[in-house]
Length: 474
Image (cartoon, rainbow, N blue to C red; front, side):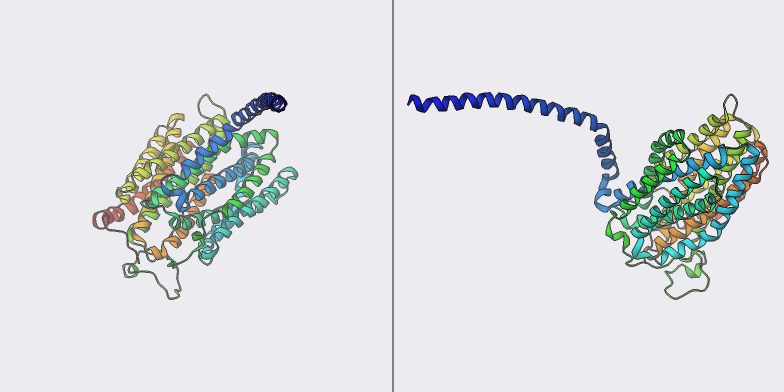
């Protein structure tokens, strides 16, 4: 019995000692893991928080959360490209030479784009079963073009301009496909306006995060933001294929054409037509599109006009870089606020919202033109961003309400193309405009007044007679 107890006791002692050593090792390992978790928490915790926000209220189950994340990646990549092009084309040379460079940039990139833009929508209408592939292709094309631009930046080659045109076309193609995809991913009890506001906010937040990163990469070298864009776009390419398969479904869709002819408001046209336009929409949509075009024109005009004006004549007490930064931050903050407010106003009469915001930005432009100064310029850009976001979300609401479901995705594609053309026209005028703040803002106010006068009557009439109608589903 003693002999029997001895091994057991030895084993027991050895077991205790082993347990003591294992416990020490376990405590050490646990400490290492705790430190590792603490170090990784800022990344993993942030990632989980973002995923929770993007997938809330059914967005994760419907697939909308994935689209929000993809659009955030798209916005970050586009910002990297913008930083690289701005530093190369705009900031690296004197103002007079910069105007010539930007004019050349517009001539080689924006002018061809105005010809290509009307083709983007109809071409994408022919790819209803390949939307994920189209979005991934847009990401891959921009990733490769970012490398070409990086090479052109270092060598000063003229291939910068056609590569920039390619980036612009690919970016807008992505935007058109995204607009067509959103209706397929609506969660239950989600309006299209609320879904679009979430997607847009995701992109805005991503650009806010990417801005300091892009500035830091540019401090290393002018090509580094482009390398960052390459990595981001490749990531976006893979994310595109993680979207829900129903994105590629074209069940029940048809092609939308743009016109407000009353005889064409009874449904989609399945027969071939000779002259395309937005044919299955009501008069409210066409007038809202005109009002949005005026605001998008103003956005393009202010982008280029203020860029040169503030570089040559900075705001009082500030450098050119600080002045441009203030204006850009004001515009971004206004756009984000407008997007958030737009989701809250989604069930209010969208016609009234469009008429109101157009009048507000017109008043801001008039005041800024008369009393031109630093504070009023910042207020104008913030107001423009705010009103532009609200007007676009209201246009989305009208398309949802008045356009039959069969042609709604096509209507989004074509309307987005038209709005981009308005932005290009405003930017071109902003380039050639003399650097006189009062004169430039007077021109902006005149264009806005014309847009307001030509759309207000139709929108108010629609609000009185058709604002309370239910969505028409063909």
